[in-house]
Structure formats: structure tokens, C-alpha cells
Picture 1: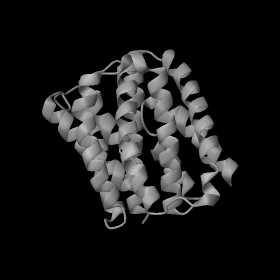
Picture 2 (picture 1 turned 45 degrees about the vertical axis):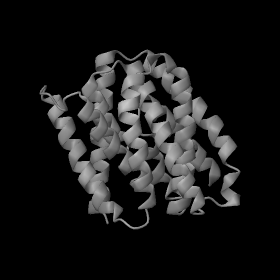
Picture 3 (picture 1 turned 135 degrees about the vertical axis):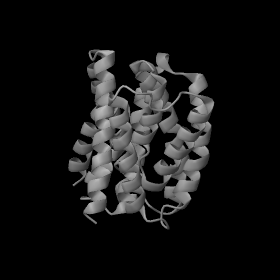
Length: 239
């Protein structure tokens, strides 16, 4: 069972590095076939932290510090709120609403019209909302990407900035999960192995990104955002 999860983790980190997000969105649903929700949530949170550390290291020269501050601070604040509500809010309905928003966003982006106007307000709202969903349902990367792509960042700036914000969010929500007893000693032994798997997967993703043209990269991100939106809606219909 553990090796199956580690294989999932590797694939998720490769895909997450290419798109700049999505490793937890891929890994969490699959992990639920192997573990209970709380165990899956905390293991994927560790995976996400390790993967983001790798992405920050590999793409560190592209970090946008100004956007990091404007987007990251509200993300951290509302992540904590979402994490504290994780056991008391119907998550299926929230995922459905988020899924509809993401699909509409991708459709609007591909029409060539302006999606979200890059501004301080956009940064604060985008950071806060994506952080809240990250704490509440364990994944806010797609929503974060929807806002960050409006800034038309280069692929290096996008990946480095998104990874740093995601790491800040993860560090905020993980202690809440651990304090709630989400991780048993039995599964804690997987943490060091997850670190190695995440870094290797991130490095493989970096090699692929290096050879992807900027315009194709943007299309990959939009396809990933739309796919996550469809998945959230399907999950809601299936409940």
C-alpha cells in the first residue's frame, strides 16, 4: 500500500511541477483509496511541502517577491481559518462551486478576453480565497493558478512564486492537522521517503518545463485548471 502511494506521489509531483500546481489535487483523491481522509490529507500536505521546496530551489531565480508579499500574506491568514473549519463545512458543495468557477475562468481565458485585472486588489482577493480553500479542502492550487495566470508571468516566475506561496500555506495548515492527530506513528515513517520522492519528481518536472515553450506552457496550465474544475463537479455529482 505504501509503495502504491509513493508511486502516486512521484507522478503527482512531476505533473504538479509542469503545471505549477496540482500535485495535491492529483494525490489526495487517489490517496483516499488507500487511507482514511485525515491520514491522506496530512500525508499529501507533507508531499506538497517537499515538492514546493524542490520547485523553489530549482526555479528560485524567478521568484517575484512583490507578488509573493501581496498574494502570500492573505493566503496564510485565510488558510488557517479554512483549516480550523475542515471538519465542520460540507466540502462537496464547496468543491462544486470552485469547479464551476475554474471552468468558466478557462473558457473566458481562451476567448482572448481579459480574465482578471492584475492589481493589488486581485492579489489580495486571490491569495485569500485560494488560501481558504487550501486549508478547507486540502487543495487551492487551481484557484491560485487562475489568479496568478492573469499576471502573465514567465513560466519560471510563475512556478517559483506559486510554489513559495503554496509552501507558506502548507506550513500554516499542517500544524493544525498534526494537532488534530491526523498522522499516526505507523504512517509517520513514510515522511523521509516522501521527501526523496517529491524532490526527484520535481526535478523530472523541471527538465520537462525547461523544454516547453512559454505559450504552450500557458495552455498546459489552463488545461490543468479546467481538468481540476471538471473533476470537482464530477465528484459532487457522484456524492
